Length: 304
Image (cartoon, rainbow, N blue to C red; front, side):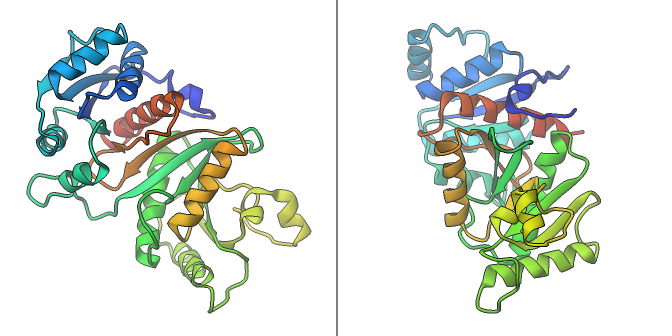
């Protein structure tokens, strides 16, 4: 598999369709995207939520969900618990947030007794396709971790590498972003980036993952900028993953790619036993569909 653009995600089919547990399924936009993904043969959905409301919305959209499993549950906390347990028990491969608060779903995911905890850290991985960059760019973490420390950043890198490799990248080039490429003790992002680079040089990351930093954004994505500044690096100008030091930087870069660069995007949360599709109300229908397809591809990869 070698995914070069997000539309290719929609064409990936598996003999055993990945089963998606939709938590609080009574949401028009989510239902629309899930139904489209189902019609494309990407997933097999399991709807968990208010059955009457779900069926009413589906009927209004001319969507037929009669042939799929619908679990009637009006309590949102129980919806989340049911969805998580389906994944935990192997009855679903990944999970998607519907009309439920993110905090409710993540609390269920992190439940110590029956949740989907691992030794890793939950982190958000966004994939952007922008006309000005020659390949897909992975941005992390602009959605969950506010200001991760070095150990947390290492786990965030590992999560993003799984997603990148699931889409066919044997080599994953990670740029640890900061405001400048020189280490400054007063700028924590530069210090952390240098530590992460040292971890890479000491063989602490899996094979195929190359980590460099600190790198300013221009050096990470522009070969011309790197050449002008005389900066030599395997990552400079050719980054796959942009690791941000804070959620503010990640949020800003991501929305910049969407609204200034007309970028397409897909995103999932990694670090649990299965991918989690967390979509925002502001996300386009297209982005929701891409995110479901991404979850399917990553689920298949981690379950091999």
